[in-house]
Amino acid sequence: MGPKKTVQNQVAKNSPQPFYRTIGFFVYLGQIFGLFPVHGCHGPSASDLKFSWTSVVTFYCILNSCITLLLGLLYFLENFRVGFDFWDYMLSVWFYGVTGTMMILFLKLAFHWPSLMKKWELVDNSMVSYGYMPYLNFRLKLLTTVLFVTALVETLLSKSIHLIQSYKCRREEIEGIFEYLMTTVLYKPVFIYTEYSTWKGVLLMIFNTTSTFAWSYGDVFVMIIGIGLALRFRQISRRLRLFLREKISDIDRWREIREDYQRLAILTKTVDNAIGNITCLCFASNLTFIIIQLFNSLRFRKDLIDKFYFFFSFAFLIARTFCVCLYAAWINDESREPIYILADVSSECFNVEVSRFVDQLRYDNITLSDGKCCCYLRINIFTIKRSRP
View 1 (cartoon, rainbow, N blue to C red):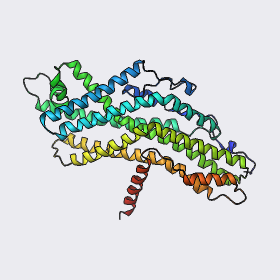
View 2 (tube, rainbow, N blue to C red):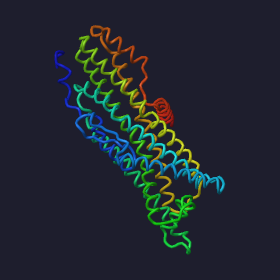
View 3 (tube, helix red, strand yellow):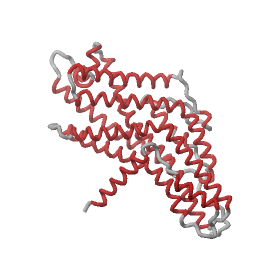
């Protein structure tokens, strides 16, 4: 391979798919759970992305968030009425508060999503010579499928436990297991203020299920954004290694790759400003529920399915939190990689653009909002793992 061979000939593919279109399936999936009311995700251009306050999807998202927050408020009021009950009421207050806030944050993000994806599309177009990120579409769909199927299994286990509890404990004066499940086990604070009916119970089950998946949706969203940005930084690192192998000394070529990195760094900071509240809420809520589950482990469980559900949900929660940390910190890892590559630039290839690139990398710290926390947590985890005998 001669030094005159261009970098473009080393790229396997030269027609990248816009990122907004790659995650279009994920945006539409969120709308099922009352999140992300954006239209035109599979259009030919980011200009086709639209948000409308008058659309049916937006109305559904607002209704879902309001009912979720209302459920949290009812549990909060009931907690004061009966006295402080952490396990039966405050956990529900925290859960519905987090998921309701998550829905509002995604509604806010949907309003800014078209303009954000236009900026992302500009970066995709400027990096067209780098090619499409390999297997990105498959990787994102596989990640989404695995996490949501696991969340579905967790939800079914939870509902099964409540159903068994209702079957064992239902009173004779209340007809039907479902009625006891709604009025006594799951939504007692709601049916204190309103008369029970089956359709109300079904609606509450639907809103509870959407709230459960909305919590997982935020985690998967942070992972997807982390993957999309980290793989772009990895493409720049690969091209830098190619520059070193080809012994590229053309200052214009070095300026182009430095500007590509600069545009990607600016995009990362712009994305961070847009989704920062979501990433912090995901990270904080996961850590809080881990602490709660640790205390919950002290409770005695007699039923086998109850024990299995606890360990399954706890393991899923820890794994999900760990993945959020890794993918959020992955952006920082890939953005720092070029500085180690540039340290190997030979003297005959070194120029003012390389020097500027090194200075930029030295003082620029690129992460998501909780990226620093994720980096520290991940380092501590791996340090503990290495220190084990």
